[in-house]
Length: 166
Image (tube, rainbow, N blue to C red; front, side):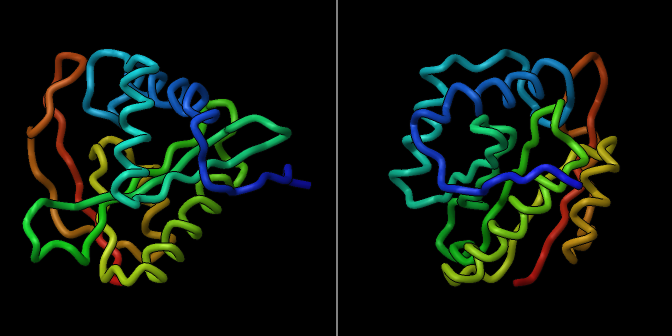
């Protein structure tokens, strides 16, 4: 039997757990193209910016602990892109493989449709084939790859862009 978790809207009280998940990925993977761990203040500003702009931040909670989060936001600045969003889903390293990411993605897609968006975009490090396959399960298609646009851990990184027409 798989564990029961709850997907809910994040609050400021969830920021330390979101920060822990984020910083693990920054320091140990190419999931985020950042070098330095974020501070609590930086993550809180990220959250407040999302809230001020009406972007969702969802958390997955298991036994009272945040074990994943998902969000979407503006794809690009110009007005013609206003019906497109770029999303992110992250699951704590100790809780992967429990369908938490699936539940977060289902809810993000539902929210994007409800809010009238036309397409969702994912930018994924090309070495993260697990994420590419995860997105394919939801109907995302590979649109293209930008080669050597990131540099982390002493190597050039490619970004695969995937898209779901809602």
